[in-house]
Image (tube, rainbow, N blue to C red):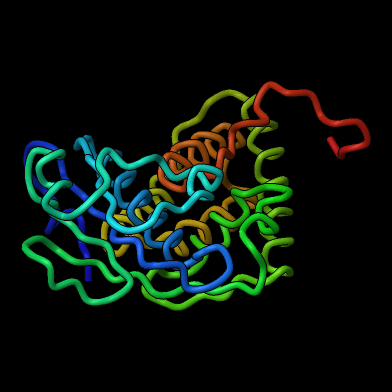
Length: 241
């Protein structure tokens, strides 16, 4: 079990290497998931104030940028990545047990879909990101059309809510909710627990709108769902206020 506080604390940059497997079906979804988990890990570590350098072995995944995954700082063989990043990776992310050298290893379970990623991304590619983040990284996942439709609706609802909350006075984030969410991320990259907390917080009557805004915006630094992108924009015609 990966616990960032215990295993990845240190000085200087943390070097992460994502080992992308060959495409295993339409769109190479397992490779995309490996890159996504590496992206989330990097965001969690950076949220704690430590610099991260990313490396990647294996084939490129063209849809990665659309799903909000930042590009690698180095790409090639493990030795080339170590040279380019100024040292060996401290963490390796793979879809199988890694036996290539030193450093911690985090295994990412396979992901499947019967659709092409081009089809998945037609409306909102970040719905793919949300759906993958809704499952623990060590559990296999299959993306289906109905799940993506629900993810799109959730993103649209949250973005509109965040824009509305942004118009209210800012309030401190509720520590009783944020603290367990941050702990889940730092213990096991527990994005499902974070998303569950946000769903509960969305309708909570005991938390001011300004505190909801700050919480959603803060945790989106890890989730990468662009939840604040509707802030300041007018409601679309016919949309509920």
